[in-house]
Image (cartoon, rainbow, N blue to C red):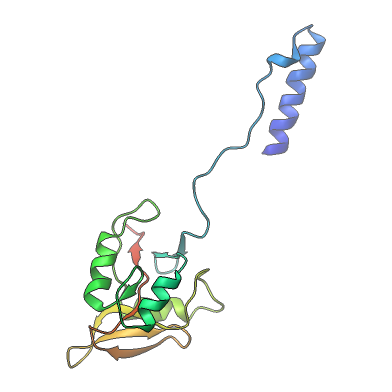
Length: 161
């Protein structure tokens, strides 16, 4: 597309020169500007899901390790509220994923997320004894955790309507 536009622009300039026109009157050709960042999300087409894919900060890593809540790390209640309130990549219908969704995305060959953590991520799936599943992303297995425990958070949204 770029080469076609350049060729068109050159032809227009040449035509103006032949017709005695002023070449300085030709508008410059510019590339379209995109506000989209390619690393904002991961779209899982087979599951019709869009995943938050955002860099984890040192403070979030510290919250995970010290059993606190901050940013994309925290207890279950914090994680649910974080996703409900998330306004990210132009969408505000994010939610905490199920354990099946987390397992599915982490069983794919290779690493699909740009900002990966090989640790536990909260799911919305309850287990027994008032615990909820986390998915350990390095092996894609489920493990029960107490809701008060801090784990990483990665929100998801449906793209199918």
